[in-house]
Image (cartoon, rainbow, N blue to C red; front, side):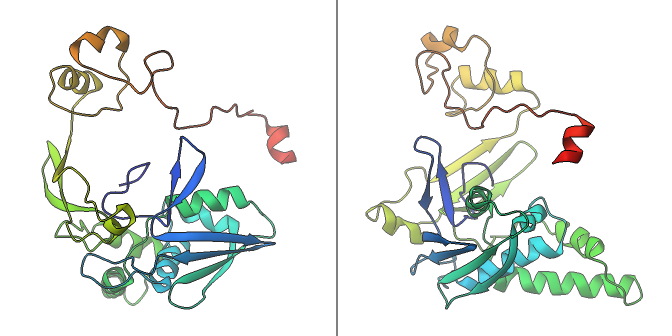
Length: 263
């Protein structure tokens, strides 16, 4: 799960839209000096099987995005190198050509860290299968296609507060992991819901109808004239316009060949 909710896999930091700050998740702190960004992991961060989340997991995750054309492959435009600094720290060397610490912060808050012990065997198996099918040649695109075919739907090894419980064409159900390592960050308190159900609607209108009828607790759908729904029990973050907390920065991109060539 991506965006602002990391219930199964987790990034190193979370972005707080209310304060504009990065808050610790798998990592507890970062520091920037010249072109070097050092990230320190939480010592007690664990996968669901009780094994620790380490710098090797972070390195392997970023290496996957470097080798394969994932939706985070372009992160490497801003990273020249990386290395482990012990078991609980990673040092990134930021790109000289595209030096951008703010983009690097975004990368830290959006890259979901994967367990090397689970995904390295998967990658190796996919490479072997492609070589067997392609007479010994395994291109990155072919291997990535094989990896993408893996559903990962049998109790995924992850680090977050929830794990996959069931799914269908109508809904995805997550169940709380009571032994979640991050409970210690919240005075030992567990997340309140035992289950989180994500219903899959065929249209925006169907989702809005379910919200009004009390069939869902939370919705991010666009609801026209939402103020007319207040008397039906629908609430918003703000009671006046804009009603919602904005999650993106509005920008204007100039589509000009001359401007593009100049930049």
